[in-house]
Length: 118
Ligand SMILES: [Zn+2]
Image (cartoon, rainbow, N blue to C red; front, side):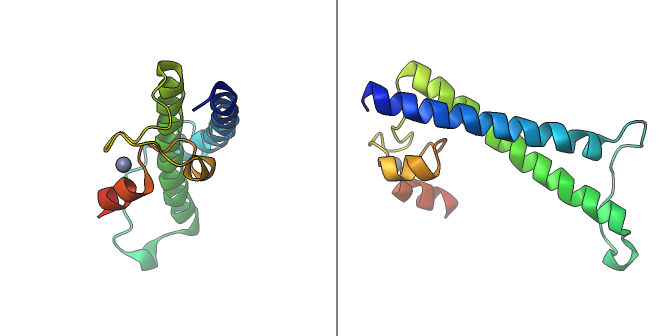
C-alpha cells in the first residue's frame, strides 16, 4: 500500500479511536457507578428486572464492545507502524481497500473472516 493511502487509513483509525474513547468515557461512569455496588446482575428472571438494571446491562455490553473495538484499532495502528497493515493475518494476502474502508481495523480478508466466524 502506498504512503498516502496508509496515511489516510491511519487518520481514519485515529478519528475512530477518538470517537470510541469518547463513548467509553461517557459510558464508564454509568456502568461502574460511583460508590454503587459492583454489577453482579444476571437477568435470570426477566420479569423481575427493573428498567434501570436492564439499561445498565446493555451499557455493560456496549462498553465491552467498545473496549474490544479500541483494542483492534490500536492493534491496527501498530500494524501501520510496523508496515504490516492491510495484510491478512491468516493467509498473508492483501486485504482489498474497499474492505479496509468499511472496517479499517480488520485483521483478515473477507474469506478468512468468514471462515473465522464459522
Ligand atoms: Zn485471508
